[in-house]
Length: 352
Ligand SMILES: Nc1ncnc2c1ncn2[C@@H]1O[C@H](COP(=O)(O)OP(=O)(O)O)[C@@H](O)[C@H]1O
Ligand SMILES: [Mg+2]
Image 1 (cartoon, rainbow, N blue to C red):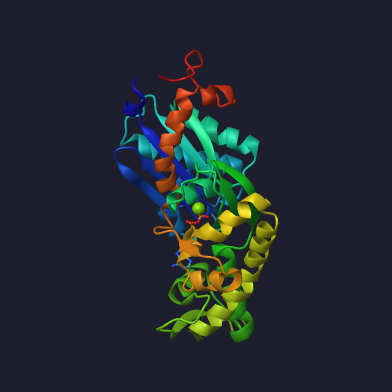
Image 2 (image 1 turned 120 degrees about the vertical axis):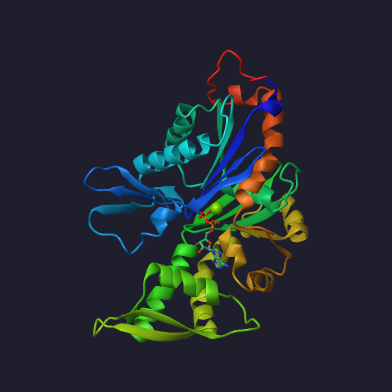
């Protein structure tokens, strides 16, 4: 079979969202990384958005599981199960014969776990399954030509982790990860409202506050919004008015750990790449790239150019789509057979 005729499937296994791209079809799946089980029967109740909508509203017979948390797999069985169900959904709309599957994983996923996830894809009928770092795909999605021997600093602010990497010539030169990202911003907003107003708010309310007001620098149209929660003293429902400025202070505090890590990465940059970094600057991707004022915030601290990925929430699968070119080249060179990526059709390692 000709390489061009194969189905190429790329999955972004993010801690907040999972996306799937299928060649010839585009993005066919884009839902939260969560799964719901019936505790009595252990059967799957809901997947993705449907499971997310159950947050905070479940009873004791339902468990909601987020198998990839803070950039690591916390429940491998559930992760496999989730992947299997997503593949089953995808299979309904595609011909899988001889498909090439790319799994973009957070950098904290271990070799063993990667193999376990790969096995799921092989079991579902994939012909060649490849795992790549999410941050690398993000970089390509943000428009960086990672094949060039030029250093680029990429910062991917996702749900569970912020990953920072210096990438050059298809390789990750340095990478670091910190568990400060979307989920922590929500937690910090909750903590603030609790300590300042004695009100406890839910996960979806704090997500909403983050989206509505979150910023790192002053912006036009700052405002106040009402949020509803539970008074921690009386237990009764209570309204709180919160301002853009209050939320910004929460963000700026949380961001200091990200900034510290970025400084550490910059300090460890090999000198021969330092010039590239100053010229190319910083590329920001992941959902956190959409926080108001993020560009001015980083430019203010580092005094280098900053670029925001134009479509940060889909950047990983867009990058994976472009990465097909590299996979193609590598297949021609017999790279995957040689480098330990098991091919199902072992006697024909080039797959051509
Ligand atoms: N406009 C926005 N402002 C701030 N945070 C946002 C915005 N849009 C999305 N996010 C956050 O981005 C995170 C998801 O980003 P994503 O890159 O999909 O994460 P992951 O790769 O971990 O799945 C979530 O925490 C979400 O709340
Ligand atoms: Mg991501």
